Image 1 (cartoon, rainbow, N blue to C red):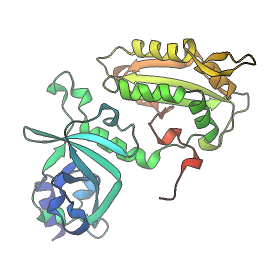
Image 2 (image 1 turned 180 degrees about the vertical axis):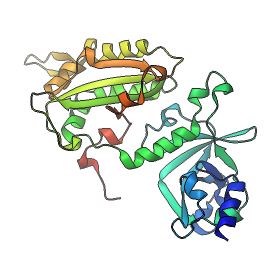
Image 3 (image 1 turned 90 degrees about the vertical axis):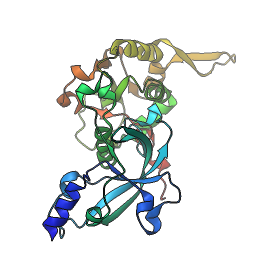
Length: 302
C-alpha cells in the first residue's frame, strides 16, 4: 500500500516547487479567490519516501498569482516574500510566495489529487542567454533554507549601518540592480587585536566590514563596485551642524567609523558568479533587506 502511494505521487510529478490551486483543498486551505495557490516546500525525496509512518505529511507555503515579478523579490533577498515563475508546458504564471503562511497535509493526498497545476523550474543552460536568471526552483529552495539559517548580526553593527546610511545604499543596490546582481555578501570581523570566538550576534565593536558584490556572468561587476565605492567614500551626506549653524558634511565610510565600523576601499570586491567558488562565499553572509539589518528591539511576539 505504501509503495503504491509513493509511486502514485512520483507518477503524478509532484516535487518540491510543485504548485496547486488552493480551491483543490478543503477548509481554511481552500483560499478565497482564484488567485490563491499553495507551493510544495518539502524536499522531493521525502515526497517519494515509502515510509509513511516516519514521513506522514508534507509542507506547503501560500502563494498569490501576480501579473509580473518585482526584481527586488526574485532572488530571496527578502526573508518573507519571494516572487517566482511557474510553468506548465508553454504556459507561464508568476506567484508571490509568503513564507509566513504554511501548512502541513497528509502525504497521501498527493496520490489522490491528480497532477500539479504548475511547477517551479530551473531553465537549462541550453534555454538561452538568460538561463542563469531563470533558476526559479533553485531560488525557492535556497530562500526556504535561509529562512531557517539566517545569521543574526550584532545590534551595534546594525545600528551603525543605519546611522551611517550605508544600509540605504545596500538596499538600493538590491532593488535598482536586481537584474544584474546575484547577491550582496558581507563579512564582519573584530577591528582589534583581540580575536572573537563567540557567536557572531554577540560580537562587540569595533568592527571591520568587507563587502562582496556578485553579479551574473553577463554583467560587468567593476561598474557596480566603482559606484558603491564612490557612494561610500566620495559622496558626502549631512551629519549635523557646527556651532555657526553650517551643515557638516561627511562620507558614509567616515560616519560609519565614528560608529565603530571601519570599511576601506580594498575591502570592497566585485566578481561574477563564474569567478567565485562556493568555499569563498562560505566566509560571507548574504545580505537581505530586512532580517540582517533589524535589531532585537524590533522583534515582536506576533
